[in-house]
Image (cartoon, rainbow over all chains, first blue to last red):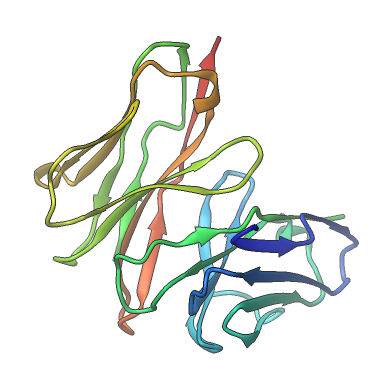
Amino acid sequence: DTAVSQTPKYLVTQMGNDKSIKCEQNLGHDTMYWYKQDSKKFLKIMFSYNNKELIINETVPNRFSPKSPDKAHLNLHINSLELGDSAVYFCASSQGRLRAKNIQYFGAGTRLSVL
Amino acid sequence: AQKVTQAQTEISVVEKEDVTLDCVYETRDTTYYLFWYKQPPSGELVFLIRRNSFDEQNEISGRYSWNFQKSTSSFNFTITASQVVDSAVYFCALSGRNSGGYQKVTFGTGTKLQVIP
């Protein structure tokens, strides 16, 4: 069983469209994250949720809206897609929100291409 | 503020050579953790190792070894007798706590390792 699974793996869409990426973890973790990896492989945190509560919200356009229906799921909805949104989006999870020692486990990534 | 520097953008070695990937970090925290992740060509991010700031013992796991030196703020990763399967992008990461008290992980820009058969 995949520990952190994201769907879809690839997403190709036109500028201006709205799209969602789903993430689910079966590790029993209570904290989940969204990261963006750009074309130069730079990984940057976007959001973090702990038990459905938003705890980290980096400087991300408000076209991006995360939603956590329960602690095992964290979805990412993107409105009015722009060319600059093209990237690989990674979901991750960890147990606990306060400890620097927590290991984050990553999904396989969703490659978003905006045309 | 946290910062992780991986100065080596790309490294190529011939199979069976040893290779060291450098990682230098900056933090004001007294307690922090350091990680290495591997991203093979298939794209997923795989956790390799975690080290805490109070434990400077070197660690060896098979062909992999890690050298943590607090005095130079470095956490270097050595692969002995490299293999083609080691070809990947390797990320060093620093974990501390942000102003809100939550875990915050900062990744380096990665080092792409190519092992040539």
